[in-house]
Length: 473
Image (cartoon, rainbow, N blue to C red; front, side, top):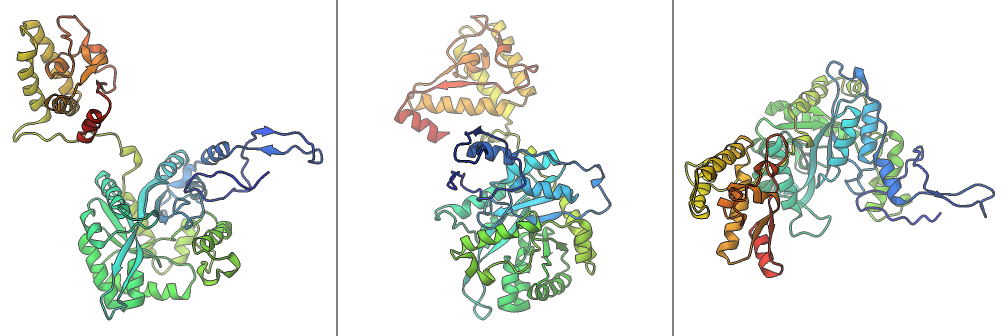
């Protein structure tokens, strides 16, 4: 079978050897010595890799468990060696109750990670490593270089800010060259926590190039941007230079009264996955594996470790291990919190969405219903009460605004479908049929029992007029 396979962008060329990937079409045994060759389509292989049987451990809720707050997946292209499902599987095996996925410059793997984590009983924390353009002052290393700032989402506002920050970092730059400034980070800091990071972090660079004073100034600036939401991160991979840096970070954290947090900077799920990570590292640097040398991580340590292993590793700093779990408890956002919310419609001073919709509806009703009978008034009041109860006034205001834009611009627009059963839609000029006179059933359009949003379809002309409406929206 050919080694050339079509793979989706962002997934590394890895095939866990122990996986039963399923069987596609089998071919005959001609030329195979009596053994049938198995052909599995790339799509089937990809889907099989996503679906796992996770062992849920009932005894996972032990006292003060360790939580990994710094893990990257294969969606950190050429820098992470494991699929999101691989990370979850190993975290569950090691009884790690929560893991933060912090891929480089994106949340691409977050959905797959969350889905697998939910099935395994592991809590998926959302975050990212944002590439940071940061310059040290002259005399402290000078020049401009890039590092990565680890950001963790606490709430919905934080997720929105993280996505906006990552988008701002990618805007107008070549693919794969995204970066942000500290000023951009400061503008999107609400709802986010920050870790100083490992060797890839800006504080490590400042400490190495500018010494303790440069690192202190940077940490103080980050602390001002993230008041009460900055943790000094410590990683231990049995490297002498890393431990020298950790000593400086501990001293700095204690001087500034900042909490320490232990992390392992996971780049692959299991120790045996380091070989694949080495291949990806060599590929990233455009060198043969045999010539990669010091570009490769020196030790086989950046994999998941159990609570007992991390406590042994940080036996002199148990508070750093405890702090990981304490911080994770504050980060209660998950992708399940991303239920759709309507855009906030701009309202006149002193108005609510319901009061503004009510005023627009009654103003329109006096023109549209001729005459405005008692029966029509009762129907409008009934519908407005239901819309207010279901908190859907904003939706009707948005559709009304689109229709208003079309009418003012002399663009043909026509509401259709079950919306024609609504007296409110008729009063707002969204539809063209009087549902009271035609004795149409409003509940076919909207009712509390249906448990779903109403659907208002608008027909528009094609071409430039349609594009004008799209741009307005």
